[in-house]
Image (cartoon, rainbow, N blue to C red; front, side):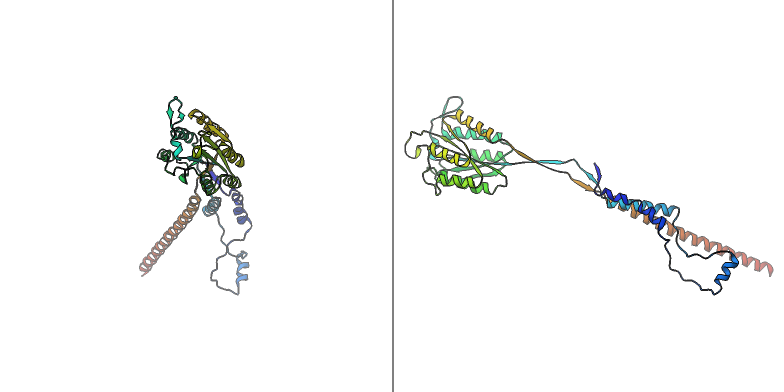
Length: 345
């Protein structure tokens, strides 16, 4: 649509009429002959002297009015405003921290069809489904075992995220479980994010066996940085050694950060957990709009300049034609005088 950026400037349009009405005529500086008997000549001729001035009238008056209005229109900045361009950005960053220690290769899970599968295969299927549902969020992936590593940064490219998830294998990060280090890495990654809502979902089937930062200390740091950590525990709490999952520690981590703790025994329960997480972390999208503007102030400005140039060209041509006509008349008079002189002789 069309609009003027400074429409109030059009209120100056009557100033042209005020200037024509009250300002004195423009005076040309010309050479003059001083006559001591000027007053006597004025009385004898019956004319009163007046100061010379240029009075604008006719076509030139209308030209001045049109040029003035065009200049005001150019100053008002006419613009063509195009329809708004809408850009959606997520307002939530979710970081998935998954355990790929050696115990995740244990075949004690059952899929939705009742077939026995490994913990990692069940987890990967559920995480893929979660990624597909969170199309508006920036998601990232951390894998941890003996150490914690960023597998995928926070991104909206969920196809690449799913590809990296599929390429992840049990044992890539070592056989042990470093829960505290995974939370610490997640804090560094989420601190670099610009969104206000930061969520980490941590899933493990063991207990912390060698983190540089204890899980409780890491949870306190996460709370300080405004990060909510939801924890999911799967595995056998009755197992011994590194394979024993510490549900109490996972529950304490979630409580310390304002998150929730979940326990999953099979793939169906794991799907219910992620469905719950999908509900408690609602989708929020910030919509940004921008309306492109195209400036057209140059159109009335160019029209005013073209009118002035055309007027001066026409005036120059008219003056040249008048001079040629005067020369022709003078030549004709001279020829007539010569013929008269020839006739008398």
